[in-house]
Length: 283
Image (tube, rainbow, N blue to C red):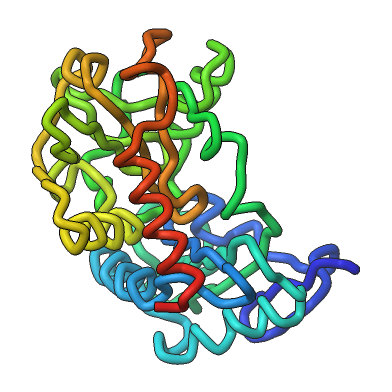
């Protein structure tokens, strides 16, 4: 079955979908996006993603092409038309098409596209055995709290990791880990404290991050929001990353050195189980 996508009010086979060459996302990365997980045919934590979308739009002075309250119905239709049981729904809003000029166009119609991706989220080799990361300098712009389509620096970091035989990169600024290329980063100290960077403009305020920290507090686990150095990460008892595409992913090697005993740790595994329970319940 050909994948069905949504483009500016219409559903169509992906081969028929087109966007103007003058779209400002293509010319200036002038757009924002969100990715929502789907488990059992249902969107996971979608309200959080749409709240963040609204914030990203406001930060870029970008108008929503449809009322925000109308978006979930379109997402659900994308899921239904593609018979998606487990995977992702991607949505992107751009400022629209206009003749090339750095200044915002006086009049342009915002664009909205959506598509689905089948993906195994509940079971994956990374979750079972852990992933390896390398640390690289964080070369991105300073407004990482806005989920823009400006992802080239993150893409370069990801490819650097793959070329080095690792699975991902953790980005480092002034000696402190900011986040992964498309995930939030965490360590677990020897006394069981979960440590992750505080939410500032330096990191994306992950929706999965928010849910995982809430679940940790409900499970009476200690949480500390602060920066941590690469040295501290290498000496941690556990490490993990969170994202809508991988939920809670154990990190078992950093820069070639094992974390703890080199296998997924008990706190990481517990948080993954709690998150999957939440996702399956539709809470």
